[in-house]
Image (spheres, rainbow, N blue to C red):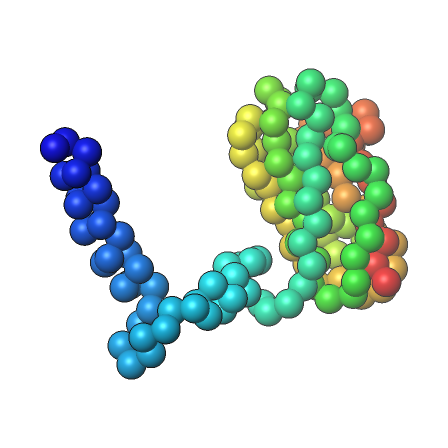
Length: 142
Ligand SMILES: [Cu+2]
């Protein structure tokens, strides 16, 4: 008895959720909704661009998990996860560009994004002496 009412409850919840993803009442077929939403929730606007993921060392060493990154010219976003106990951020610098992400604590994500032309840039952590200690790398844009 209990299981049956739970199922009924889940069904009741599922119907409005499915309905709200589809704002066109005319099309009854909901087979093609997945593809269109996927493109929209990448990077925060600006259209296109490339997202590069890095992470700070989880053990608290002053380094990233990558020392070189490559991207195509255009909008480039470096996203850094911080799984360590230290505050970190990510900054992109070079060719007149200098963009710093937020300083984040454990569990946080710092993002820096810039419109980059082909060339060599560096990415590093701007917190304290982290860059000098080795928390840096090369970003090559082609
Ligand atoms: Cu750092």
